[in-house]
Amino acid sequence: MKYSLFALKNLKPNLKYINHELISNLYVSFRKETVFEGGIKISLINLESIFRLIESSTRIHLREFATTEDFSIGLFTFINSFLKIQPFSISKVLKLKYKKA
Image (cartoon, rainbow, N blue to C red; front, side, top):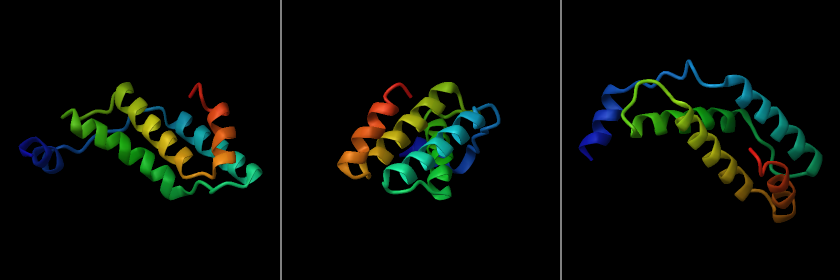
């Protein structure tokens, strides 16, 4: 609990060195796929949640700069969560496509 409060109050993670291009490409790709397949569409709020997940991972590890590990954790968490809210048939198609990501 003590470390959580410290992280919330004192750490402002810097996301300067993360791959913004990969996140934007993922967003565009998910957007196209969900429109084409008819699933629940990704929105800008979802895009913001990716950055929040990366920030959270950085804070948990008590770092001031996001690393590739934080980036991977944030993307992995988002992709899994996003795929779980999709209808089964669409989720199945998206899982096959993004299995490598």
